[in-house]
Length: 212
Ligand code: TZP
Ligand code: MG
Image 1: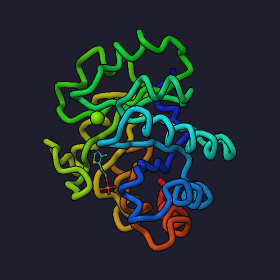
Image 2: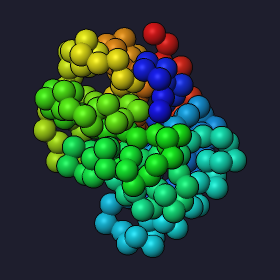
Image 3: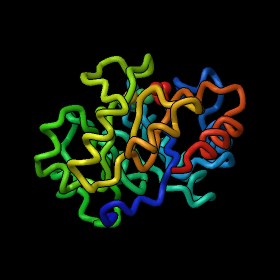
Image 4: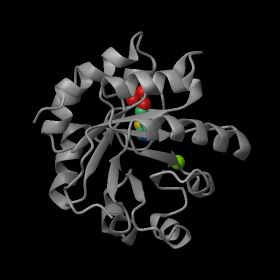
């Protein structure tokens, strides 16, 4: 597990083929890495296990080339079969404690989305390497969300835990810096990179905003 507050990643890309506007997701991911993304999550919804695994293996080959860790969203079987660097789960997915039992390799990263403050008091937080603050701002990319944490929400979560905090939800170059200043360790984005005309430039611009 990652020691508390020692999170070596700042710019986290969450990607799916559908979010890439008809472009090849591997191409978008490579451009994003070249622009400075240092952690990637493959988040595929509505596809078969076989297709998910195929995409995970393709993306793992690419991320390995650049030594960027690949996490898989909410699918321990795909994560393990692809020998990904870890997995990210939400509040209603398989809980981190169960993931740890299924996947005994302690070097694997487990991320856990926080949607309610009550979640901070449970054993799932202890079993996680980082917490996703989800969503910081409401976003058309994911609409089945509960809280909009806002910058104040980041600051209150920061007071309550030493876990690395990854902020997600409508973060872009115009607000990334204030999200970090509010207490997040890392920002995660979908559309700020996947929908950008030039994903490499978009990632580079975001990365440059992430100075405390
Ligand atoms: N979890 C919380 S918000 C979100 C996820 C996966 C989507 C973020 O997408 P965007 O386009 O960066 O707002
Ligand atoms: Mg999920």
